[in-house]
Amino acid sequence: MQYDLLYAGIILHDIGKVYELMTDETGLGTEYTLEGELLGHIAIGLRIIEHMEGLDIEKKLLLQHIILSHHQTPEWGSPKRPMIKEAELLHHLDMIDSRMFDFENAVVQTEVGTLSARVHALERKVYRPIFD
Image (cartoon, rainbow, N blue to C red; front, top):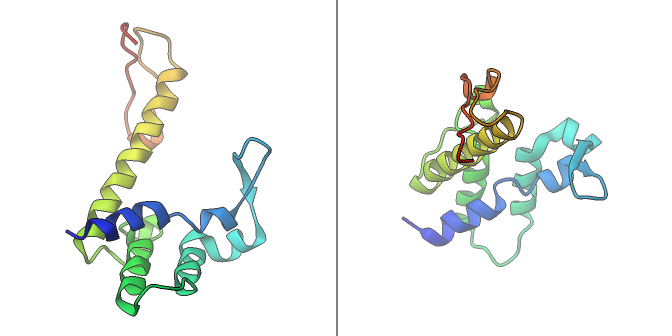
């Protein structure tokens, strides 16, 4: 496992979102830019990596692969499936992050000791424990 490649992928896999989304004064992404609508964060991220200086050809290629494959499947927006360990691990870390975000959103909208409404992204209801 190339941990430097994994860490770079963790930091850079969504770098295109900086240009994909407009933000409000709090930094929250509120709507898509024209570039975001037309290209999306994956294509924008590839362009950013391509223009980075100080990286050899293989490192650029591997980082671009990580960006291309971090959603894992075409139906989730990735044109390529992960073909290196670092890309596979990053995909799962990104999924864990996304699921924890969905759990947290459901929990804060649910009364203590009750189940939430069905959370579409998780395909289930979520329980908010009494000790929360």
